[in-house]
Length: 358
Image 1 (cartoon, helix red, strand yellow):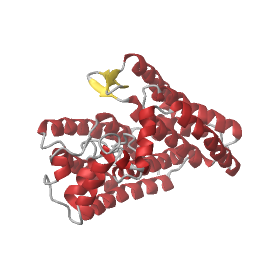
Image 2 (cartoon, one colour):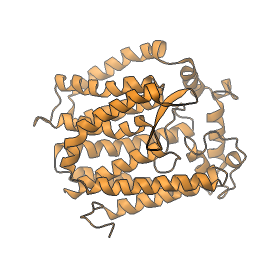
Image 3 (cartoon, one colour):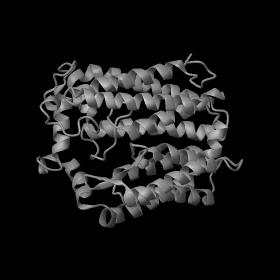
């Protein structure tokens, strides 16, 4: 009955693959938290809630979602302001607010809300090519929430949100000349960001990426331990609950940022290929929905969600194997966390809603 088109879940393969990866995430989380069943139960409860949220969103008509997009964007900006002044502080950052007893990181939800807003704005006119005025307004839409997220401070999430917005603009039909302008602007802004925007610990993370051994017990510790965990897994891994780096607690943040390292250590290269195959199925089904989308708004939004899903996977995996600095990006459907889970299931609900119209 759940897979009935009237309810909204129209792609059975996508739906079942999401469930499989989510259950796999709970299994890995059990190992990553040293068999802490309470954590797994809490995450499972969040998963059930997000599952029904996905079904609800998928049952809505995509045109209705288009209409409410600017309102949802304004609400998210309002929540970011509240977070800045009355948010919950953790490890020196103010990123969470309590809503009905639920700790919400608004910046995570923005990874979906921002593409919705840009898709709505770009689809207002029938012209499917972005002119200079549209480009400027689009970047204002992007940088407004980013200005609040940076103050939390959360530079890693700010960069991901920026990339989410740029992806939507590119899919909207940007001119080649504007691409050159953006690239030139980046070359000018990057040195200024390094000098005036980045905090000392953020600079140290980037420098440590080049040479982790320069600070093996400090900023380089995360990368070194993660690479050891991934490499020690071999082809078939050490077996479930048998990972030394995770079970002996050498690996930090093993339930969130570095859950891929836990998975790689216990299931090895073979397990990684299975996980990537499941992710590939999700990506291909999302690409199929994007290709079949009937209108401009749906195409931009579906394409943005697909690209963002790929971006999150690449960023987290690259972070775990030392190709990118530690930026606090979780692995979709696997990592511990309510806000990241909420945003990804919200996104999948939109994909199913778009698929109903094709």
